Structure formats: structure tokens, C-alpha cells
Length: 246
Image (tube, rainbow, N blue to C red; front, side):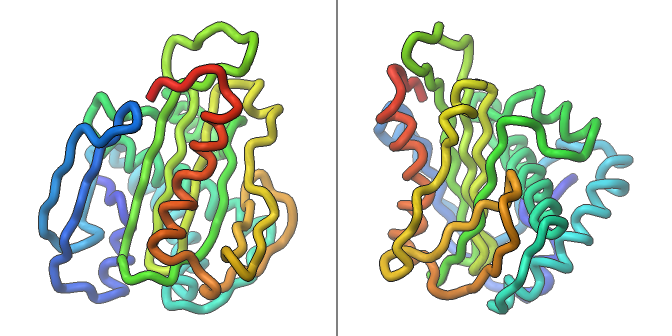
């Protein structure tokens, strides 16, 4: 079994008490299902990978990423250059896939071609953007997922959902993974506008690589800001597309 949240995170934070968990499913703009339970955080797993991968390249990637993330999880700033950003980006996409496999079958939306590409090459496929930000609230972990069919003007409807966005946090560290199989969306240069640092914390693009960055734990997103971060690109795509079928 592969842990959705890294197993070292639970051990490092020494979290022993249980927390309230909430799982909401929204379809066509309305909550269609809600589940609440009490459990220790960071214990979810998925039977989604073979032992060879789990103990091989995936374990190596986890260790390389742990070196980068430990200080960040503890609230220390970190300079990230091309190699570090690449490791974090591959790891974030892998975790997005494990999150996907831990979800109900009808809620999964990461494309089979992306799985195949990552597992064959251990690299990020075309059509992936990944951003990094910070969080100052009290939730030890958060995740949000959106999947949709987006049809730019003049293009035939795709047979299935062609966009996914996964946002997740580990303490003060927040990742957002965007994926699409639509080349026209790649040309739209989906991304984040410049952020006023007096209003919102920096949002760093770590893939595709653009430049070295310095991640800092503050200023960070509060709880409302985390939801804003999760939903902004979704709202942007709805605004520019002819069609939105969650």
C-alpha cells in the first residue's frame, strides 16, 4: 500500500490525536454528498502501485523530496533551484495520482496517459503545471480536487473530462497540480496572475521551471485563502470556455 500523505510526515510531526475529517463532493455547483469522520491525520493509503515501483524509484523520489520538505514543514524558508523544483513537481504529480486512486472510481480523473508517462519515464508529461504557496491556518492537511470538460470555442466536445486540478497541503506547504490533455488549453498559458503581496502570499510556479525561487512560510494563505487558491483556476476556465461539465 502506498501512503497518500507521506508516512514520514505523520512520524515527523508526532501527531497522535484524532481530528475531524470532512469529505464533500460537489457536482454541477451543488454538494451532492458529504461524509464526516474522526481519525488520525495522514493515514490514508491506496493499493495502487506494485512493490517494485514502491520500493524502487518511488522510494528514491520520496527520500529526495523529504530532504527538501522537512525544513519547510517545520516552517523554515527554502531556496529552490531547478533540480529541487523538478523533484517537488514530480512528487506532487505522483501524490496527485495516489490521491486519485484513493478516491471512488467514478471520482477519478487523472488521465491514463499521464500514469503511463510518469511510470515509464519518471518525468512530468506535457500539459502539467504545478504551483507552490504557503498556508498559515491550523489544518494539518487539506486537499481539494476538481475535474471538468473544457471546450474552447470552435472545438468539438471531448469524450471525457480533459482537465483536473488537485490542491493539497502539508502543514504550511501548499501544492497545486493542474493537468490537461487539450493542447489548446496549453496554448492558453493557464496560470496565475501577479499577486499583490499585501493581499495574498506569493504563488510560485515550479513546473514548467521558470526561475529559482525562495519559498517562505509567511505571509501565507488563511482558510478562506486556501479555498480561493483551490477554486480560482476552475472559475477562470469556466469563464473562458464554452462548456463546463463537472
